[in-house]
Image (cartoon, rainbow, N blue to C red; front, side, top):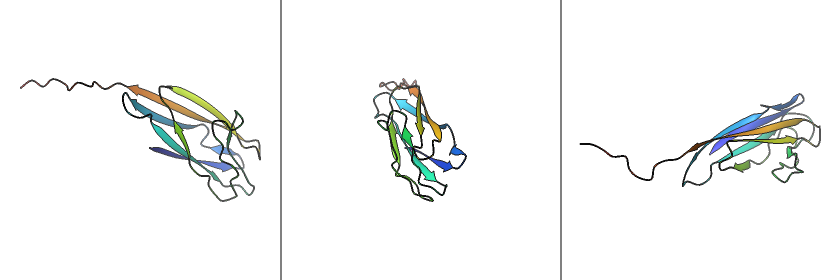
Length: 113
């Protein structure tokens, strides 16, 4: 599982966007990644998706602390942008999901002896 950390600074989210890539293999479970937000400011922050937190929300993150990991699971999305913000400070960011679709043959490759 891919893991990433986004730092919340007074200047904004870093990195922004946070880009995570998946390799999807037909017949395998959907790939996943976990993102953790780390608050480096002196005020309580959060990261909440722009759909009102339906996709994800970290909840309040105390200064100097990190959120619990948020798990993203995607299948055949190729590229998906998830905008989010901190309701405490108005900072904005984006999670960019890049999916590379791979189909493996269920049949073994022929071997010539």
